[in-house]
Image (cartoon, rainbow, N blue to C red; front, top):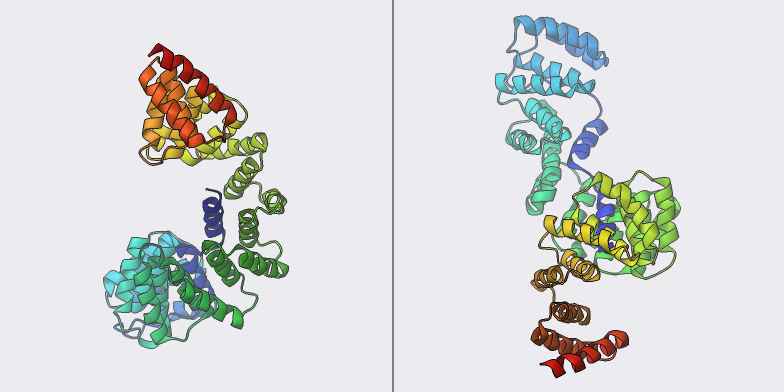
Amino acid sequence: MRRLLLSALFLSLSSIAVCSVAQTQGDNQEKQVPSAPSAIAAPSDQVAEAEALIAKFDWKGAQAVLAAWLTAHPDDARALFDAGYAADAQNLLDDAAAFYGRAVQADPKSFEAHLSLGLLLARQGKLTEARSELVTATALDPGDAGPKVKARAWRALAQIDRAGNPAEASNDLLEALKLSPETPEDTLLAAELAQAAGQFDAAEAAYRRLLAKDPKNAAAHAGLAHLFIARKQYPEAETLLRSALQQTPDDPALTAQLATALAAQDKPEALPLLQKLHDAHPADLDITRMLAELLAESGDAGGSDQLYAPLLAAHPNDPALLIAHGQNLIRQLKFAAAFDAFTRATQLAPANPDGWSGLAFAASKTERPAITLHALTMRSKSLPEVPSTYFLWATSYDTLHEKTAAIAYYHHFLEAAAGKFPDQEWQARQRLLILEKQR
């Protein structure tokens, strides 16, 4: 569980969201006067005037000229695109989307309008709509914009497809590379896609190729470290991350990964490192969750549970949080409260055996043998029996005066315990002496 949480935090801190990638790609492009769509004739004097203002970054001036022109010429695709471009530059995203959409309707073959609308929709998180526009753009003639700009459409598609269809994302990236040289961002994406597909050797090769060109690339360090952690190569991850953190000592993603590698090796440095990270980012719930789990594993159930309070306030229906909270309550001997937490967790996630394990123990401690037996039955659908569950079966049947079942489970417990639980084994033998005499 701990490593899953740490891995999840790494992904939340270091992976590039589709929307932000699309925006970053747009921001990294030098602002240019948009070229006229290929099917559109030379602009009118008013549109030419607006484009001259756009070239000077006078967005409001261009807007005023275009608004007057579009009042009389509402289907001028070039003017509509320019109006969208000016609104986009001012971060008026809804207005920009509306203008780009009208430009597409006025000229369905406008590469620039489809591309710009697709990128904008991606930034807004409307990925299905964005993908449709970008796919259309890749099938159109980019005209004066050239193949490099068309490659941008393919790269944006790769970012959209990466989560749901890594294979398609790889194809998108290959199409982009046919049109323009490989960039560091391409290499990083190729590595991440290979890793997602389980092609670890290819992913490692791509990360190392990127680091050879750019030794300070934090994303490549994070990606390669994540790969090492996935392979359980914790010492290699630790070495890599310590080196990377010398260059960027306050990087939260790299710090979280280092804590992961250290915790996996049971190194005590993991806890203070994570506490320091939490102090620097107290509002980050993922970091708080990591620290809470690590505190619990270190034996500080009270300190851990204090951190679960804000987490549960933010996510009251998270079964994993409720289970972790219940386990802390058990360690603090707060069995009634633990019973409530595990009951809620099993209602929300009936397929999670950890919730049923906790409920069985809490129910036993609060003298609810029937619920204990039900919880054990549900748990047994996913997990094998262990000495502790055999003991709970036995004592619950014993409490309910079901002697035959109790005797059978006491024997199962003694066979499985094999001298590892002397107190409970003594109790089981004493009960067997009594129960077998009564049978």
